[in-house]
Image (cartoon, rainbow, N blue to C red; front, side, top):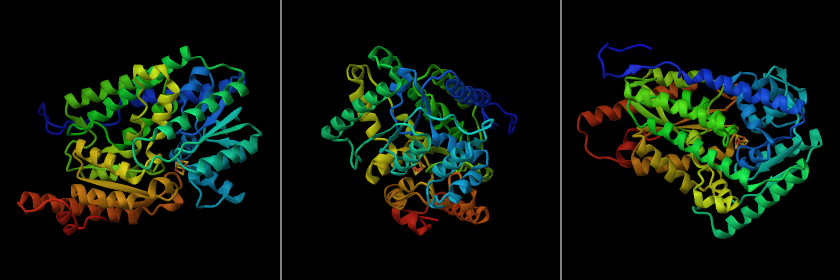
Length: 439
Ligand code: SF4
C-alpha cells in the first residue's frame, strides 16, 4: 500500500483486497464440492442466475451456474476457444457468449477447472426472468445429457410492483418447480429447512448492501474490479454460511478502508457508475479509468444482487415471498423501473456520469441503454459513455477505439468540472448536452 503524502487522515492508495485470498479459496472449495458431489451421487442441478436457489440448498441439491462458468471462461481468457467449438457446431456468433462458451466446453468435455468440463447435471432449471436465451440454452443441455428440465415461467414486470395476479402465478410456478425437484431427487422440501436458508440469504444480502454502502465514501474503498469478482458468493452461495462468513469479513475490511481513507483511486477526480455485465476478459480497461483518476462507485450488475431479502412475515409463506423477489430482478423489469433505480444509484453514490457497456452478448441488458442514457441526462444532467464490447468474447472488442472514447469522455467530465469551478450558470440537461451528453 502506498501512502500518498505521509500525513494521517489523507487519502491513501489501496491495492487488492485482503479478502481476495479467501475468495479464491471459497471458489476452489465450491467447485471441488461440485466434483465431489458427482462422485458421491449427490444430486446436481444446473440452474440460471434467476433461479430461486433457496429450495435447492434446503433440499441438499448442489446448484451449478453455467453463467458463472461462462464468466470464468472469460476471465481465464479461454472463452473464444470454446465459443469457436460451439460456432463450429452451428451456434450463431450472435448468440450470448456465456451460452456459446459453456456449450463448447460441454461438447468438448474440457475446461479451465482442472482440464475437465463441468460435472454433468442430474436435472436442470431454467427461468424466464432474465432472458429467453437461457430457455433454449438449457434445452440444448437437457438434450445433450438426456436429463429432465423445468422452465420457471415468470411474467415480465413492466412497472413495479408486480400485480397480485402475476405473483399468484409465479407462486404456482414455484410449487411446480418444487414438485419437479422432489420427483427427480426423491427428497422432500421441509419448511423447517427452508426458513434458515432464507434467513442466511437475507443476512448475505444485508452484508452485500453494507459493502456497497461503504462505496459512498470518498475515496471509495472499492471499485468495479473488486466488486465484479466479489459477486461470486452472492450469486452461487446465497443461502449458505460460507457466503455470510465471507461478506462479514469483506464488510469489515471495507469499513476499515473507509476509516483509513484508503481506496483504489485515492485522488478521485470522477466517480462513475457502470451499467451491464463486466468485460471479464479485460479488467485492464477498469485500470485505465483508475489511472486517469476515475473510479467506479457502483454497478447496476453488482447492485442487482441486493434484492433477495426476506422478512419474518415472509417465513409464513416463503413461496409468495420468493415469487415477489424473483419477479422484480433487474432484467425482468421495464426501462422506467431500471431508470429509477439507476438515477437513485447515481444520487446515492454522487456519480459524475454513467458508463454503458453495450454488450454484444446480452441483448436483454443492452437494449434499453439509450433510453437510460437519455433519462440520466434529462434527470441528472450527467454525461454518459457507450463502450461496445462483449463480456467474454475478446473478438468483439477493439481496445484502441474504446480507449479513445474513454479519453474523450473524461475530457468532457473535465470540461464540466472547469465550468463548475468557473461558475458557469445552469444545470441539468441543457448543460449536459452543451458539453456533449453522450460519447
Ligand atoms: S443473454 Fe444476458 S441474461 Fe441471458 S444468459 Fe446471456 S448474459 Fe445472461
